[in-house]
Length: 185
Length: 133
Image (cartoon, rainbow over all chains, first blue to last red; front, side):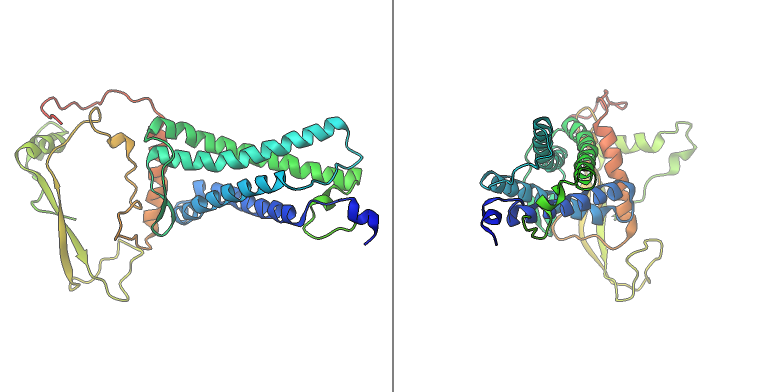
């Protein structure tokens, strides 16, 4: 490894990349299960039984990921990005984090407000975080759907932006977060 | 669930179409309604995923308890509107069978509960002035 390669960090750290792809897999699975769940009858119960613990897992992963990010060194933005683009990228990243924390909390909160048993696995139940109030449940249930669409649209914007930078601008944006190690050139 | 006494259906000649509903409200004040919880012990090849196929009559049955309703209340006082009567929300010790109808009911009840929860609560269409909590 050359001296410049060691000092100039081009990629996110291995742990950050692991968290990124783990979150991507979990969230895309979750969006698929959510869609299938509300449209199914015979598989509804099985899908809901996966949806609830998976949501809590995403909440835990995203919180750990966010803390890890705070204490990690980030690679610099590609030189092709203007200051305006950089601030938009940072803001949208923060927005994605916010959605990923709020969405599981809204799911947990709505089940609490309806006093549904929040079964994680077998007889392991989660405690309610809101008072029993069905009007609150109805509002949060609606919010859960709206947030799911918003999350999907934000994911599409994020995905499209990376494709644009990687294939059109050709500034190696994807390699910053590639699951494999990319050497600096 | 088996009722202790068969429902009284002798009044069906009456013109009032709500006679069963009203007879239940009037009757429960005089005598509680009761059902037995009967468990039928299945055998290896008895189907558990289709409730329309009856098991052989010879299966052993165990009377494990009774359900007693001793009063009724209207929506104004009760919270029936705020409960999802989901057949898959079960107490400890009871597990669902592999009957897909249970999952389908769970899905539909969830939908109706959600819609009901989002509606403005109106005064109950049925009032029970004679029933006190």
